[in-house]
Image 1 (cartoon, rainbow, N blue to C red):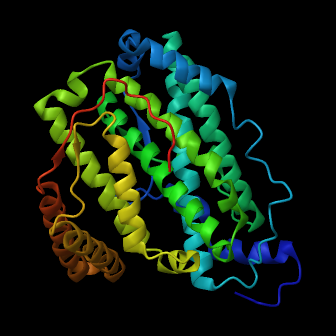
Image 2: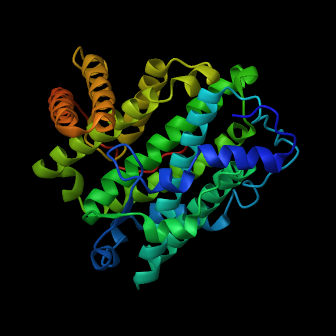
Amino acid sequence: MNMHATTHEELAAEIGEQFDTDAMAQESTLLNPRFYTTDFDELDRIDVTPVRAEWDKLIGQMKSDPNKGHFKKNEDWDTVDWDNMDPKLKREFIDFLVSSCTAEFSGCVLYKEMKRRGNNPDICELFNYMARDEARHAGFINDALREAGVAVNLGFLTKAKKYTYFRPKFIYYATYLSEKIGYARYITIYRHLEQHPEKRFHPIFKWFKEWCNDEFSHGEAFALLMRTDPKLTESFVNKLWIRFFLTAVFSTMYVRDHARPAFHEALGVDIDWYDQEVFRKTGEIAKQVFPMELDIDHPRWMPNLKRMERAFRKMEAAEKQGGIGGKLAKLGAMSSAALAFAAIYTIPVKKSTPPASVRLEPAY
């Protein structure tokens, strides 16, 4: 980076040359946020009668729009010194923002499509509110990226990004966990920076408290959707699927976070501590609807997360190597990652009985 830039426009141009955020957002790998599509007709047939009282309360809360004026820059938005930011931190922070923006926007696209295609008034109203929230989140992150001259072209992304088809129940499991782990991630960072404000190197972290409450309420919606059909969380096969998604979401987060050491160092958090804290919060919350919790203190847990993280780094190196040697190295790394995943998946779970009333309120 040329440290002699004298204007914001020059700086933005220089950063933009280094970070192709549109390409970053379009990447389709195991670790990157995806765009999803599903069976919208099946979603439209959902009957929320079994959870009507809790449903109406949640919808009323969403309709009141408590965060209507939150996602706007104000006097708390400090000037960011992109010029003098450590290059490694800058790269990892931009990667964090792009990944977060893509994840939020993917939710917006999915929820908006559910609302557009449906006729069920309960389901359409829910997804209309959730699409509204996710659009605000994505737009706010993109404003932060725009200051650095590297905003994501979200309109282009809807056409260029590959879509993954998931059955509705898989959408429930994956999106519920995504929203709840999003809450746990944001509130853990927010609480840490309350205690260590000198580590707040960007103003966007000041917005995390109310932001994560949106994530929490979205998770509540998917918890209620799962409660409309007991088989979704009680059948033997679906319990295996829940266990799979818990393992996949947690292990993906671990690998992704360890790819950003400078980012976490700047925040002043140990990655292993942070991830375990987020896993613990998410697991405790998820007992509201899932009949199990992963045992993150088991002796096989952390060693195999580390094994998986090493395997993904080897995969990346093998892809850069190319050729037959690179392909063979990648296959070996993929096998190692699969074995590590299997070792985690087969850890005995902590069984639990979800409460009669599914609703929770943010408590961390």
